[in-house]
Image 1 (cartoon, helix red, strand yellow):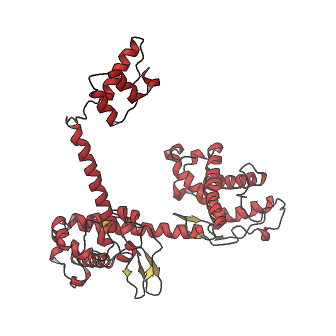
Image 2 (cartoon, rainbow, N blue to C red; image 1 turned 30 degrees about the vertical axis):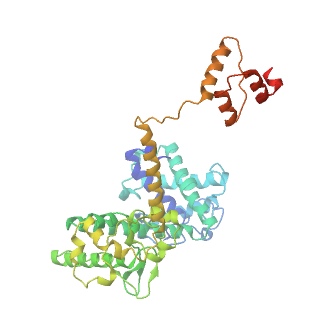
Length: 428
């Protein structure tokens, strides 16, 4: 099921169906006790494991908040005991048309329709007019179970804990995105030079963090590719943002961040490209291949005040100067720890290419090279003319001395001269 195929007023019904399947699949446990029914049970209700340890009330399920009463789970457990299913869990290794998978789908959609009709998902604004569209509900179920969940199942088989790790990365990436937006807005509002905006607009330039329950704050992790000068710049920027929020009376950030004494390495290893040279750590940069150095950094631009002249909490005056003036003042000092041999080789290659192009352009501007008209070319033209007339003229290969003799033959007894030079067989 594609997003474009989902009707606008069916969206909330689809989300409610997803939540219902998660509840059945023990994605969220809600405690209940199955009620006795008049129909005979294939297995004892006590043997039903689905929803066994769950608790009624408001709970977080995926990106939704669910609230279901005990009665709904009594009903589900009773139904499962009649059918003989202890644990509702589709077989993701089989096709959707597998008999057991069909039974799981029937149970899920039947209970979803009954709970939705009774108002269980009214808080999610489920559209009840779609409850009779069984074909649409089938497609919704198959999309969630046999596509979304099957993809996660395959990942987990290849690497245990992969889904949990991806979920943590996704949440961390969202925090980095919020941090990027707040820093970039502050820099634009305070007229930061372009070199700083270039750094701030890339999400890979910002560090991630991890919540530490002991300190009730998020520990900032260390990016292996970011230099100490860049780290000082980001710390100063965060400090200025905090001071500005206090002046404006804004509340403190929702996720307070602190720098641990012992650095914690970041799990994000992808470095941004096109950043100023001093954004990258010299040790990390010098370990790259020549080809990678050429494209990963803008080696002809620097952006940060060197660490040896960095002042305390105050803004350095040179941070406000134009990019070109800043580059002229600090490039030679900042670029010393970096291995820039690749730039020298690249510049020499560019110079050679320019020289070649200039030579080509020299002859393409209308200049004529006089190579002279050789006798061989004239003889070739004569041979072509004679061949067109039906005569073939053959000129033997001779050396320079012979050529001079041909040009200036003796005036007397010419037949004897050529016979001696060419031989009697060729002359005849």
